[in-house]
Amino acid sequence: MRVIGVEIEKKRAICFALEQDSQGGYVNLTGNFSFLQIKEDQDNGEIKKFQSAINAFFDSIDPDVIAIISRQPKGRYSSSTFSFKLEGLIQCYDKVDVEFVSPRTLSAYYKKNPLLVPFENNYQENAVKLASYLLNRL
Image (cartoon, rainbow, N blue to C red; front, top):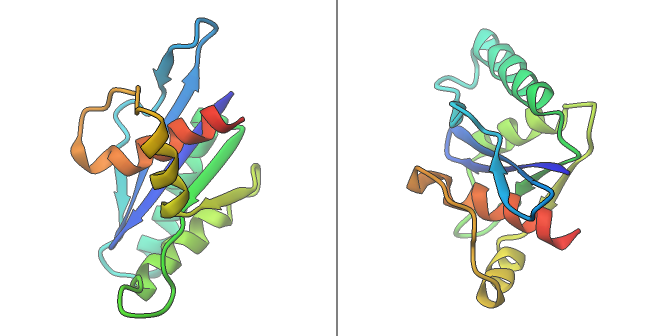
């Protein structure tokens, strides 16, 4: 099974693709892809470029599951409207339904389970946790 975990942070979407091999080991499928960023959300060219790039990444992985870490839409710690635009573009991927996992669910899961997946960059941690969670909950 192949999964992709996505964390949307400010103006970028951080993705981590993972699968489990027949021996139970984890295989990082992300390759050189680390994140996609949009600088100007009212530039149609940038929006189309983002959507094309994210769809190409998803197609290259051919995932069974794609999930996004859900963000708070209202209140003091609400996410920016910009990030919801990125979320919508990701949800437009039509080959796999995109689901949402709350940060609380991940936090509760990792209080009881260690993160066994190695990763290179600290900013990928939440996307890695989500991808690992997706593989282990199924």
